[in-house]
Length: 262
Image 1 (cartoon, rainbow, N blue to C red):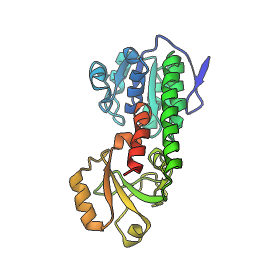
Image 2: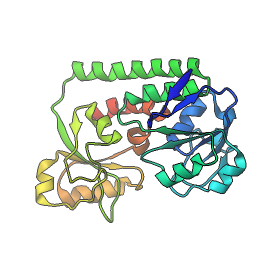
Image 3: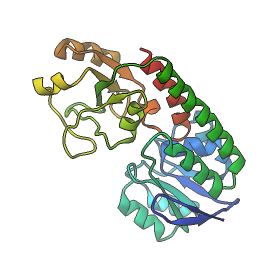
């Protein structure tokens, strides 16, 4: 059987795969599917699960990949992501790695296909189906909460960086996570991760501001300072729960319930 990735490339099942993951959230998912023993390489940003990944060789970051280290590990498969990894890197890997598996989840429910893709290629279908069942249960609980306690929609400004200030567009995984609880983001231009200024016009559009704990490490001190500056509600949110797909998305659905409940 063949399994199709985000670029339409097909990959046969391989129970003896040697895997390098260049996507932190997918590294965690592979471990949760019982495939840690097949992971021979990961990025320095692949930090979950902590004890497990310590034993896996680092091959650089998500952007500054060390191709020579990957070559030395002789992987059969490298997992990449369209948003997180550079296309020239994927092209270079394809010259010596038999299978470069491309991923691109765009919405929470895309995690089901992602888990089945990983489980299919690496012969962990039962584990993948169990994970999908758990995801469906969490997703149903979120929908039940929204039906039981309907809330008015909100427009929120989700901040990922400062100096310069940067946010997200509606065409992102994070925005689609927020949409699951009826929250939308303002359109700030054509970029997926646009820069912005704190103008009166922008402040008039939004109900509250969310400061993400990653990639910029916003803290409660930033929350307090910004609230005083703009006079709008501001809260700190867990960036992993909002932006990591795979394993963290399962916890992320429960996190969304708590976020919506205040």
